[in-house]
Image 1 (cartoon, rainbow, N blue to C red):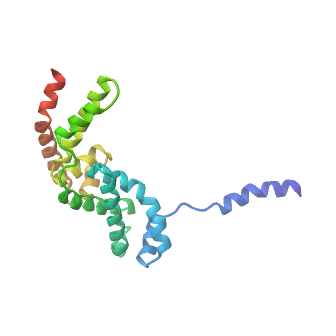
Image 2 (spheres, rainbow, N blue to C red; image 1 turned 180 degrees about the vertical axis):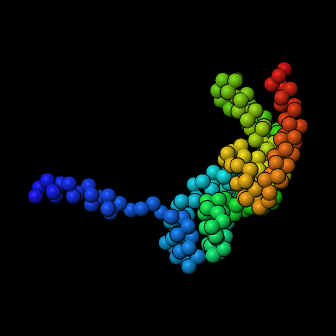
Length: 202
């Protein structure tokens, strides 16, 4: 009797172990106005969404505002989600990117090159580390000056490792159009960063 009881314990644990949360099921519940499902879905989506928004906007505060706006849109438009056409994460990323683009268009560049140089010169540490910091900030400052859709495309491609198709879906366009956005962004950055390249090669 004891051995039978001992064996039944792990079997019971396996039988009662909760199954993974299905985002599509949560979306269906959200569409019906389920607050609990919305909170659960928010927990699943918030972290990745903040990461994407920070890459596009370059600011934690702005990223949080954009994601909050996106979550409100998710709540209001949940009934439009079609699990046959996209995953919840992909569908929500499109909303987040669009919110970021809207905010980006309303913002001026976060940092000016002169401000970046001053900030880098004040950093403590070895000269090489300070030089690397200055370079990275200058690059980031120039990326922030790209047109909104170019910046979104290039940050999703290089920052998130998204495919052309995923970026196209997020920006509601075609993969061919994304290729054009990336090409223009690279050309623009190459021109803007030419002085920095000359400094590094000097």
